[in-house]
Length: 110
View 1 (cartoon, rainbow, N blue to C red):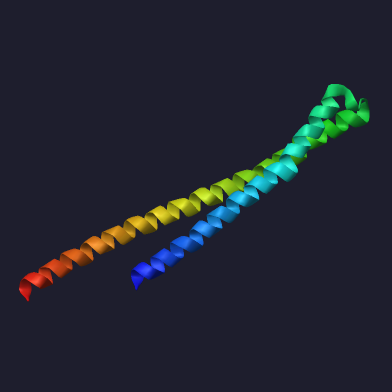
View 2: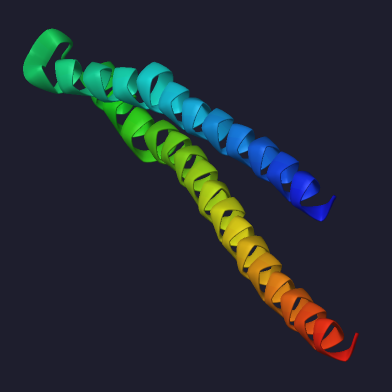
């Protein structure tokens, strides 16, 4: 029974990790990369003047770091979930070892 629950939990957690990876990719593809491309175009001269300078400054100093922090948060969350899964697996292995040892002791007695 416990094994079934752990397999189910692992599948749920793997699904969550997959969704987090997808979200990270969306943040990169639909937010960060386009902002980076716009800034580069402005810096290459597609738009010049004080407005262009202000745009580059605002996007570079406020928006891009903010989007980057979202991506970092998703990555950190994913790593933490993976670490929790590793702890769960190690605990399961330790418990299985203890249970098997107890089974061997009882087999020796009876």
